[in-house]
Every structure is written in structure tokens, then in C-alpha cells.
Amino acid sequence: MMAAAARVVSRTMQMQVSVVGATLRATRARALSTARVVAPAAVQPRPQRTPLMSPRVSGLATTSFLAHRGFATSGTRPKQATTPEQPKEKQEQPAASAGKPETAAAPKPVQQPAPFLPKSKHSKVMRLLEAEPNPETPHLEKPLVVMIGWLGAKDRHLRRYRDWYLNRHMDVLQLLTPADYVINTDKGRALTKHLVDVLYTGPHKTRPIVIHGFSVGGFLHALTTGELLKHAGAAERIRCQLFDSPVDVQGLPHGVSVSLTDNLFLRKVIRKMLGAFLVLAKKRVADYHIASVLFHANPLRTPSHVFYSSGDPIACPDRIAMATSSFNESNVPVTLSRWHESPHVRHMPLYPDNYFRDMGDVIMSYLPEYFPGQTINAPQTRDYGAPKQPSD
Image 1: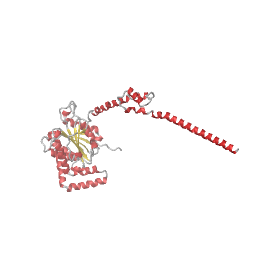
Image 2: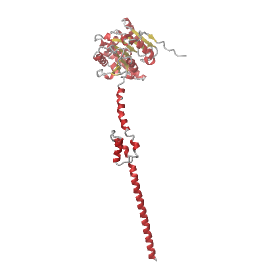
Image 3: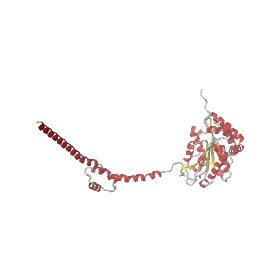
Image 4: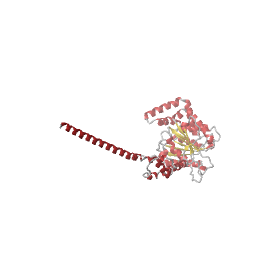
């Protein structure tokens, strides 16, 4: 009995093992069949790579190519229909890019650095900007404005002044005025000599000149005048000169101290040091006084206009009155724009309409041939009112 029972158990276990084995084989077969079905589906996105083919391949050739490679083309035809259009877009891109040079070839901006300013050790303080030619006066050389900034002025500070000239087809030769070009008069003389060399060489040697100086920049202008006296015909070339808040030698200590710092204590120290410097450095003092004499004498007899304020603590109104009186005694035309409360070299930012109106009258009056058909008003001396009284 026991043997019979053992045989029954053995057969039962064998049957269970065979059933389990059959189940595992069936599961494996199903897995393999599923893998065979899924694998082509995973490969289906490959037809999307057809843009790598030559854009000149036609739709028929594309279909034949895919069929040859073993891909099902029936389900991918909608996608393949877009393939011929992609090369068209690529072919249109060169046409769009071909239009870019036309945009770059648009009219030149009003101002751009001119290529004919010779390089020198003073190039960091000199900049030449060229205006568009005036279509109404193509037969005339464009005037050249020599703009000499105030002590410590940056390029951005002079932008509105030079833009006014550039918009009227006048080139601008801009000079900045660092403190070392004023304190070291040898360096200032070297700069003005180079400036005059530029004005008498190359394309500038016959152009009419306008000078616009600011504050201590009048010192460099006076040195420039001394260099211009060495050249014949300078008086005829310089049509007019404009001065904004001109500072004489007596105003140098105060002007330099204000331009270097906002600290009141340091300003006082700088004023004392420069005052002692002017007393001890006789050669420097001689250069300043020579420049002052040239400014007051105006040996080129150039018509002048002065912008100033009676409330300016740097540009002394009495010294300006003495200079303009000297001009009148020499029968040199001179006009004034006078304010009573605008700070040093701040007349234009505070009163741009008055400033540019007077500036336009001067420029148009002394260069009338460059403004054909326009109404020209003679420059006048204008007093823009008494200072405002404080309210009670």
C-alpha cells in the first residue's frame, strides 16, 4: 500500500512539473511573438529621417527608396508629403538672407567716424564725426566745427551740441579737455599744434571752420589761435567762434577743483594748491597769460558769440565783459546770450530753445551759402530776464 501511494504521488508531481513547464513555454512564446510585433513599431519613426536625403529626390523616388529599405510606406505617406516642401523653405532662406545686405545698404546715419583723422598720441581726446552731404549744396565743401569741451567733459556730454551741427550737414572735430592738458601747458601746446596740422593737411586744408569752445576749453582755443597765426589765410577760413562760459586764467583754480571732485573740502585744497602752483610755476603762468591776451585781443578778428550767466561762480562775468568790450573796440562783431541763474556750462540743458535759436542765428549768418532758401536772422545780444526773486 505504501509503495502504491508513493507511485501515485510521484506521478502527480511529474504532471504538475509538466504543466508548469508547458505554461512557461507558452508564456515565453507569447513574449517572443509580442517582441516580433512591437519591434517593427519601434522602427517606424525611421522614415522621418528622410530630410537627410537630397532635396532634389522626388516623392516617387522617396517611396521607392523606403520600399527598398523594407519600410511600410502606406502609413507614412502623409508625413512624406511634407518632405518636398522642406527644401523649398531652405531654398527661400537664401532669398531672405539676400535681402539683408539691402537693409545694411540703407542711408548712412547722420554721424559716423570719418576715416581721415590721422592717428597720434592725442587720438584718445580727438574724435572726428562726418555728417551726410547736403544735397542742396553739393558743390561746396562741408564746414568743419572744432568743438573743444569743458574740463572733464565726456563724449556723452557733448552729444546734443554736435548732433545739432551734424543734422545740418557740418562735420565735427571734437576735442575733450583732460586736466593734464590744462595744467601741463606743454601737453596743451602739443595738442593744439597737432590740431592745426590736421586743419591744414589732407581734405581739411580748405574747409571753412567754426569754433565752439566751452569753459576752460577756451584756453586750448587761445593756444590754437596762436598756432593759426603762423598760417596764411586763417582769418578767412574761421567764419565764427562761439564760447560757452569761457574761463580766464583767474578762473582756472576754481574750474579745475570743481571738475575733479564734489567734495567741498577737497575742492578747497585743490584751489589752494593750484593757486600756489600758478605763483611758483612762472613758465606755466606765462603760458596762461599769453592765452588770456590772445583771447581778449582776438587777433584773427573772428566774429564771436558768448553764452554765459551772471550767476556763474566759475566764468567771471566781469572778465567776459572786458573781453567783449575789447572785441567792440576792435570793430569785431560780438553778440551775447545772457542768463542770470543757470550754472556753469548748463545753459543749453536748461534753456535749449533759447540756446539753439541764438546758435542757429550765428551759424546761418556767417555761413549763409550753406542754407539756401532759408530765412536768416542776424545774431543779437539777448538778455533772458532777471533772476527769479524768492517767494515770501
